[in-house]
Length: 422
Image (cartoon, rainbow, N blue to C red; front, top):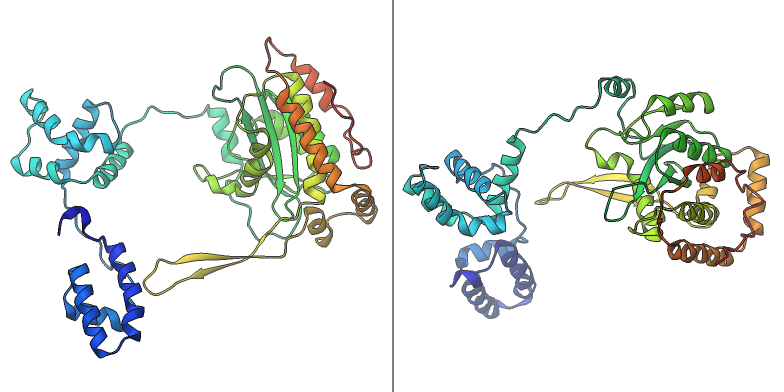
C-alpha cells in the first residue's frame, strides 16, 4: 500500500470502532466476511482483529518511553544548519537539511558521517520541531534581571494563586489591558480591571499612560464606588502595580489589605481577570489604538454603564467542583462542574458581603434600572468611543486625572446617562 494512503493509528482505531458495531451484530458467516474486509483495509492479521473485536480497541498509554532514534550528533548538525539559515521554522528547515549539511561539509564547517547524513534524510518535521525547541532552551540569553531595589520588593510579596473555591468576597485579581494597537510606541490608553474571585464582581477604569500617579487616581476611583471592602489585591509582576509608591498607597487607603502576586511564568494565576479582559474589554474596544484624552473620558463613561450592567444583570457561572477522572486507556483529566448562574450582586448578597443599608440601596438601584435601555446605552457609548479620532498632538494627562477625581456616579446617579454629543 502506498505510504500516502496508509492508515494512521488514529484512523485505524476509529475504523475498527465502527466496524466492531457491525461485527457484534453479524452472524458467523457475515463476521468472517467482515474480518476479511478489515484485514485488507488495516493490513492486520485476522487473529489480531479477533482480539480487537472482543474488547473495545482503545489505545493504551505507553508504559515505557521509547529510546532516542536520533543521537546528539544529529542535534549538533541541526544546530549548525539552523544557525546558518537564521533559525527558520522546522517546515522550511527539514527539506533542506541534507543539501545544506553537504554544503557546510564542503566548506569545512561540519564533519558528518554517512549514517548521520542518512538520518537527516529521513527525519520528520515533528522531530525537528522538538529538537529545535530543546536547542532554544540551551541557548544562552542576555541577563534581564530587574534592578536590585525592585528585586528586594518582589521578594517581600508572596507569589501564589487565589484558590478557585474561595467563598469570601474581597479577593481581587488585578490586570492592565494595553490599547496601543499594532505599535507600543508613544503614550496610549490602558484599562485597569479588578475582578473578585468569589462573586465575579468587576471594576474597570480607563487611564492615559500608566505612571504611579495615574494608577493611584484610577484605584481611588474604584475604591470610591466599590460597595464592599478589599481583603487582597493580586496583580501580576508588572512594575505598574509593584512599586513603592502604589504599595504605600494601598496600605494607607485600604487598612489591612494583603498584597500578593502571580507566580512568574504562570499565566493562569490570574485566570478570572484574564477572562474578563477578553469578554469585557477586548470584545468591546478591540485591538485598535486609543491614545487621546477624549477617548479616555468616553471609555470611562462606557465603563460606568458596564459596571451597572454586568454586576447587576449579567449572570455568571462559577466552578463548584473539580473531579479528577481516570479512564482506562486515557490520560487523567479534570472534569469541572458549575453552579447555577447568578449575577455578581446576587452572589455578593448571598455571601453577606454588604451592610444591610447598602444592600437595600443597591437593590433599589437595580429595580429602578431598565436593563434593555441600559444595554442600548452601553452600545451607544461604544459607538461613540470607537468613532472618536486618534490623537494628532501630545495629550494633557492632567485632564484625565481631573476627571478621575470627580465624584463617581454611585449608586443612584448612574442613570440616566447624558448622551455624548457629536
